[in-house]
Each structure stands twice: as structure tokens, then as C-alpha cells.
Amino acid sequence: MTLRNCALAAWLGALVFSAGLLACDAEPDAAVLVESSTELVLDRLRADKQRYLDDPASFQALVNELVLPHFDVEQMGRMILGSYGAGAETEQVQAFVDQFTLLLIRTYSSALKSFQDQQVDYAPVNAPPEATRVVVRTRVVGGSGTPIPVDYRLALSDCGWKVQDVRIDGISLVVSYRSEYGAILEREGLGGLIGRLQTRNEALAL
Image (cartoon, rainbow, N blue to C red):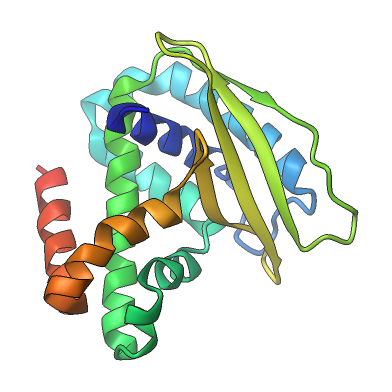
């Protein structure tokens, strides 16, 4: 799976959580949330793609407002940092989470340029009603590539379902970032990683 396809799939994956609901007023059924939200957002993008291409900042604002409230980015950040975050200053961990969040926004936004006419297929969720952790399995189909399986791992919080990881074609987003950042953390520490993310975010903003 190419990095470009990975970014596109991840971006499509993020969109399933953007129904425009308030963060603490989420759909109690994770599978219903995924399917209904995906179709609403994809319809909006098909109708307004040119506007978002002409004004990338407007799409970044859309992602920030509608997508990120459904991601547990703080938990994702701590899972990515692992032991490197356990002994770090709280302010430094928060600085990493802030830069990581901004990177997600800009990565998903830039992937809009690759959007064609993909569709999403949804598999039934096999989990008991009382489950507090579920996996919602989908496939992104269409376009020029082969179908891409995208699995969402969600945990139930006081504010509804929150995604804590996305597996794209079998590859965990959290594990991939942890592997990528681990070498930097080993050489340069958390401060060095934060600096690298700041530089990357500045480049994506151009």
C-alpha cells in the first residue's frame, strides 16, 4: 500500500466521525454512527469538492470542527509515545498532542486532492450490546486502486464513541506512527520530535 493511498484511506476513515453532532451528543451505536456519518460527509464533499480545492483552509476548518471531536487524540498520542511519554512533563506531552493533532488535520486535508468517487462498504459489527470497545470494519472501493479495508477501533466514553486507532489495509495508524517516531525519540528525545512535527506542519501549511 503506497503512502498516498494510506493517506487517502486515513482521510476517508476520519470522515466517518463528522456528522456534525456535538461531542457529547454522539450516536450510541458505533456502527450506525460510522455509516450514517460517512454517507453524509461524502455527499457534502462530492457537492463541494471544487470549493475545498480552491480554499484548502476551509476544509481544514471542516476537519477540525467536525472530525476531531470524535477522535481521542490525547489517548492516541499517549499510545504513540509509549514509555517516552510516561516520564515526560505534562506540558511537553500536551505540546506533542497539539502538533500531532495539527498534523492529522493537514494530512487529511491534503488528501482531499486524491478524492475521486470512492464508495464505502460496511460489514456488520459482531459485538454484544453492552460492549464498550468495538471494531467497525469497512472497505473503501472505487477509484483506480483495489479495495482498501479500513477498520475503526472505538471505545465508549462519557461523550459517546471515540476512535482510538484506525487500521488501514491491516496496518495500525497508531503502531505506524509509534514506529516512525520511535527512532526520532531515541535519538533526539520528545523535544526533538515536537520540533520535527512543527517543521512538517509549517511545510504542509504552505
